[in-house]
Length: 153
Image (cartoon, rainbow, N blue to C red; front, top):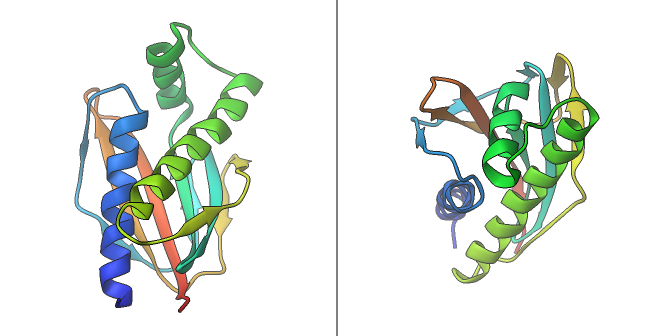
């Protein structure tokens, strides 16, 4: 199976996973290919992917989006340290669901524990990545970043 085919499967499964996990309406906009460094705005969660492919999934919401997702899921606004913790858990849910979806398609991936990053941060260490903008009804954007480091046999 070729790298391009696997990348497409991972991108599709990431979007499907986000749709399953996040209980707020959103629209997925066109993905873009980006090069390093990637600069985050406020907060993100990084999860390593290893198995048939090696890469990283970075989920970059805003603090407002985290609060709204928390409100929709738990009936309460989430902020401060709880927002940081919930961002990690949200990334973990998306990545875990992603692996389950891909397993049904014959692609095996395992995930690392989530790493939450706050503030303005630059990401290096990848050649290229796919950036998927996700727009919520209020116009706010969450970004999914998928880096593909290598495909393993």
